[in-house]
Length: 263
Image (cartoon, rainbow, N blue to C red):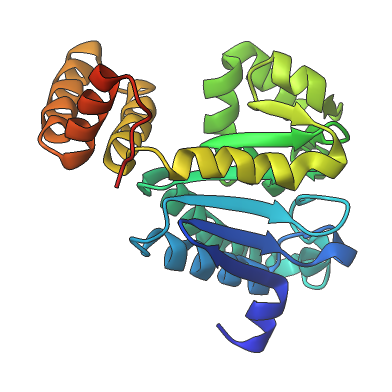
């Protein structure tokens, strides 16, 4: 990454856990081309790293991400469509990486989570939110539609009717309500957000890597696949996992009534 990339997206490795921090706090981490490219590069680097088992994605300052940087469009409205296309290609590259990676990706969200920020936070495998977090689509308010898989994720999590109402509404959903609706996994005090996110990540990172990756893929395919196809995928995954060292350790530890020590 060049220096601009490094300044707007910070990457750390902590043993088996990768941490990506969006770092445009003065702009509420809004997405422009520089951040979009840096984020894709960061996600690609960590998902390609076999030593990394879990990725935590967070935003510096008072907002996880408040959507796209509208100033980018305002500077040349005549070519807004072309500008959007470039940004969306980068953003969709990131979301595809998150969806298909073996690693579990956890978003840690606080403050206003809007537009692309909503798509990013909820498009991760798991989402933990501070109690001050609010979620809003915001796309209809600027006369466009979601990107980053936001329409797919919202429909998957909420069902068609609730998703439609959410995506066209200017109303913000508070963290507690988002938890009740099944949009996120956990709500914590703002000051405990990162501690709780890393506690979740640490637990997953010390689990059986191959099995967790298989379960992630099964959950993803269950949304669109048939039951018969899911049966076949479950059998193939189980057989592959049963041939691994972690399975042998898991069975042995269970029968010995001791904690498993996975590779």
